[in-house]
Image 1 (tube, helix red, strand yellow):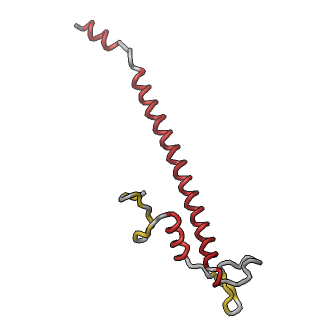
Image 2 (cartoon, one colour):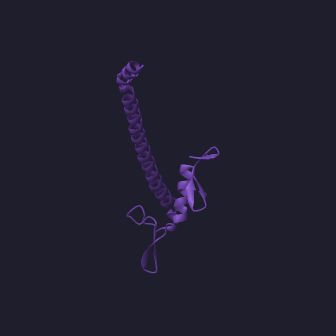
Image 3 (cartoon, helix red, strand yellow):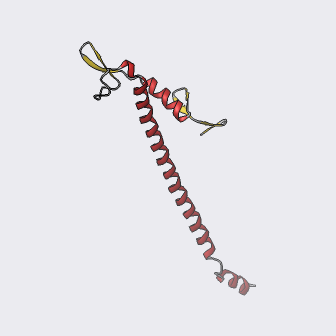
Length: 120
């Protein structure tokens, strides 16, 4: 009986299986982290482009309110008031344009995008 237990205890066949499974799980975790990082970078780039596009579009929509030399200079979204230039672009206009372009909605203090009934 003792001989059988000793032989079972010393039998090392299959001991590499645990290491192989652990290594596979580690590789999957690394791949998931890399993919998530790429997804977040892509999303950040998309949001940055949306903000820039919305700002430019708001400036273009408000062309009647700005100095009429907009085509000859960099006076877009500025207005000459009493001899000094001040910004004539509303932050609310930019946010409204972003929501329209990106398909997002204002939800309290944050902006969310819905995919059906769940937040995307």
